[in-house]
Image 1 (tube, rainbow, N blue to C red):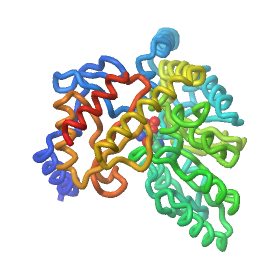
Image 2 (image 1 turned 45 degrees about the vertical axis):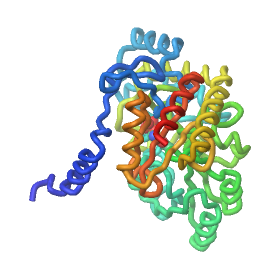
Image 3 (image 1 turned 30 degrees about the vertical axis):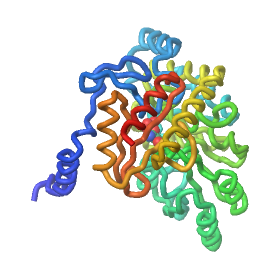
Image 4 (image 1 turned 180 degrees about the vertical axis):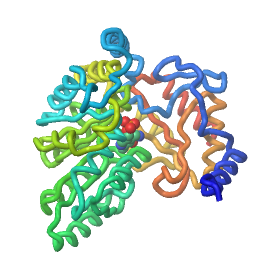
Length: 390
Ligand code: PMP
C-alpha cells in the first residue's frame, strides 16, 4: 500500500469524466482581455461564470490604487497580521468596512475562506452548537471541522426545520450559532432571513450570515441580504469576501460585539498566515468606495440578471428558484451538462461547470453569473448561445 492508493477511486472517476466530457477542470485563461472577455483554447470567449458582479476587476481607479500601493509599499507584507503584516491600509480598510456596515469592529482576513475558518473554529467551542444550513459553502463546513463545537445541519432554507432543532436544543441550555448565507453560491437563492432572525431572537441564539455573494448585490446600499430584509440588528456576525463584488481577494468579519477583536488572538487562521498584499488592500478600499458611491452598478447588474434569468426560464431551462446574478442551469448528470457547456464554448461563451459534491442535489449544473460590466449585447449573446442549444 502506498500513500496514493486511496486516490485510485478519485483518479478513475476523473478519468471517466475526462473521457466523456474533456478536461474542463483545467481550463486556462490564456489571456485576460477585460472583466468580461478572455482567451481560452486560443479563442476569445465571453466570460459568463465569474463572480465579478460589479465588474470592478478592470476598473481604472482600482488598478491605479493597486499600482501605487505596489510602488510605495512593495509586493507583499511577508508577515502575519500579528507580527509585521499589519500595514496602515489593513487598519484603514477595517475602519472603512465598520463604517460601511455601521458596526463596531471588523477583522480583515487573507481570504473569505480563512474568514470562515477563523470565525467558526473560534467563536463557538466545546459544548456549544453550530446550526448550519445544509447547503452552506465548503469554507463554513471546514471552519466547523477545525473547531470543537457540535455541528447540526438543518434543511436548506427551511425555517421550520431550523426551529425544530432550536426547540430541541433548549433542553441543553447551551450557546447556539446559526449559520446561513445571503445568496447561496450555486443556485443563487436567498436565505429566508426574516424568519431566521425571528427564530434567532426567540431562542436566544447567535446568527452569522456569510454575505459573500450578496455584498454589493443586495440591499439599498449593497450591504447584503440582512440589509435588504431589514434585520441587520439581529445579525451578530457578517462574513464576506473581497473576491467577488470587490474584484480582488480577501475576507472579513464585521460585528457589534466588541469581543470580535479577541478572535485576532484566538484564531490560528488569523495568526499563522501572511496578511494581504498592499496592492490588494488598496484596490479593495477603492472598490468599496466605488461600490458605495455608484449604486448604478448594482442596478445594471440586476438588469442583466433579470434579463438572462427570464430568457432562460422562457426557453424552459431548469434554472434556480429565483432571479439572481447567479443563474444555475441544472442537469441530471455530468454528460448532459457537459454537452451544453461544450456547445456554449463553441459559441464563445464560458460558464462554470459544477459537479457533485459542489452541487446541492447530486446533479450537475452550469453556473452562469452576470456582471454590471456585461453589455446588453453580451447578455443577449449568452442567451442566444443557450437558445441555439435548446
Ligand atoms: N463563502 C462563500 C459563500 C463562498 O461562495 C466563497 C467562495 N466561493 C467563500 C466564502 C470563500 O471566499 P474566498 O474566495 O474569498 O476564499
